[in-house]
Length: 510
Image 1 (cartoon, rainbow, N blue to C red):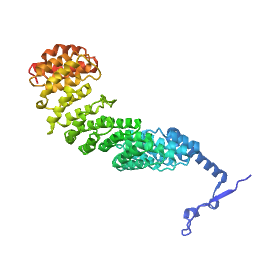
Image 2: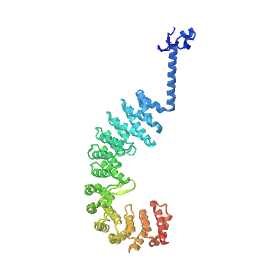
Image 3: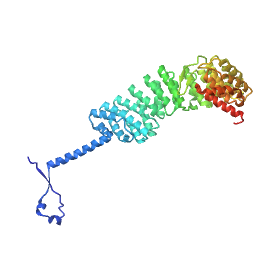
Image 4: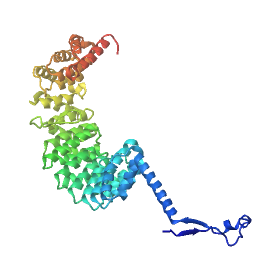
């Protein structure tokens, strides 16, 4: 069989005559055209295809991310699923190529592909944050925001969960605001799973009033306990607006569901742990909360008022009223740093010490705290009264000295986890310093060094350090404690510091 021949002739311009060189050529050459068989053309095309395929194979072997990025868009269903999962682990340099492919794959008609792509997009966004690629971070977050409008519930849920991997600091300005608005809208989604994921994400990426309002509304009215729990946790982590978050969480402490109340308390602890300052703008709401029906509400409100300090002076009458409240020590919960009692009257005593000393009602507040120290049967409440009194000046606290000395001597033989003795040591170290009863205070604090309670020994050593040469009689016992520096609670370290300060003061060194 013969293949037909194709004839290729060079095109000549009709306007120009043939060159002299062509005219001079031999007739055989001049008359012969260019020819190429179909077989040769097929071989040429196949060779080019083979070279192209080989280059792709080599590229895919050297950089498989290129292959996955291509397959996630153009492969069959199984290939797209596999590619969407494999693209979850890009390195920093690979992220700019991966993110656009995954954004497109989130819109895939196959639900499984879309879910895997949303999950991988969040992972790629985390990698972009880690390596400091703000453009890819913003692209990834924008892709997930767009997916919140997907018609499929599971894709919307996965997009919201993906945004939980980001934070307001990594997607600043307009991008953070867009994420917040989209998630706030998702809190109204008909799907509980989407609302739950959106509430969780707002705790990290949310910023501004829009997210706060959405979380506050969810905590108040969402029918799902899980959504209300997550909203409370997110309010505690929210980047801005801790005043509004505090008021919302205090209201949430009166929720009918125990788990929601615990989540609200956890959110308030998160604000304390992050040391986010609350302002005097919420003093009216906090003062009103001192009359709440739940003890935890009253205790937390008093604690926050104490943080605000003298600017919360308007709350002093309500705190004095709360100070009269009796009852048990109250619940005890763990913050990020320490255990805290939540007895409302005890928290009121501490708050008065932070608020009242510089106000016209300082004398009234100090007298009320001294009365608690003298008459109240509850050790925890008396301890907090001593803590509050330590913040007042000598003119207000001198009547408390005999009471404090007697209380410390009585409490030393009765150690325990809730012993008030450490608070008495702290108060004596501040109130008696430089006064006529400094010697009596040193004697009582020296006796406290033999307490079986490590916290009492710790605070006694710290207090004695402040009395300088007057604490000389306590030096032998302090040196003994130094030898036991490995003792728990840092007693040995506190004793070493006290010895150095007392010896330096005795030698005339500052």
